[in-house]
Image 1 (cartoon, protein in one colour):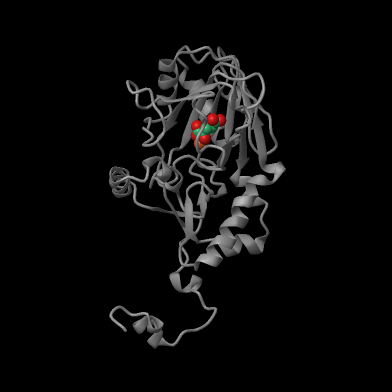
Image 2 (image 1 turned 60 degrees about the horizontal axis):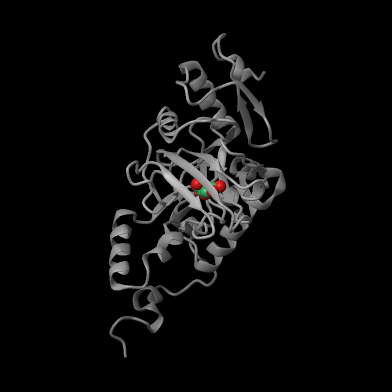
Length: 321
Ligand SMILES: O=C(O)CCC(=O)C(=O)O
Ligand SMILES: [Fe+2]
């Protein structure tokens, strides 16, 4: 039994066993359809931050039980673009089969980083999954930070990047009404500026907080620099040592720490059926691990332009013939 589980009450049969080198732990000895004790809850909360991903197998429970368990960790948020059950908007219902191929999740990401305060964690439970295929991959972005050279760590310290909901924009369609709706969402969810290196609020570990699904651009860099740097940081999820792969069974529930991990839903099962329920726990603004770099530190210096350039835009000024 791990030290974490020992911290729970004598009566508890909770077990938490680390299952991956840098993230992932199996949680057993608990029935999530029943109320969870405060002591077990505290142990789960700590393990969630420490291992980044918790896997609970054989959890026969209703969607109301899932909602109730999620609410023990904070308020549940409603996803503006994911399918929900209507009656319970905080419950996302993925119902993928031959008539409804999955959309937008076969891309590495942390959930909803287009929000100023992205979720602290997400719970996903399999209700009907294929006997093989449809795994979910995870990567520890704390391990990714720790694996960088001192030089690279130094280079990205204090940088910030813009995130937005770009991946969902095709959902609006190329009609006047679609464009109008998209503008409404753009008002509601303006681009969010997050530190590239965050500090985990529980563990204090540093985390690389950019992802290809939502991150747009590094603040203060030109497009070429930004793309090169982001591509390099995105590629860190591909390092096998930082990964963990969830193999689903019906009634498996997982709970990931959205502040320190990225995930990717492997789309190799279509046209088979894969049904999942999800709840998302609200989070807070990501904490910077370092003070934001001053703009002049990251200013483009590849060719010093004469001061005049900044006034007349190199001949491209408005109203010039
Ligand atoms: O379907 C999955 O395995 C994960 C989907 C996903 O990205 C999510 O629920 O946040
Ligand atoms: Fe996701």
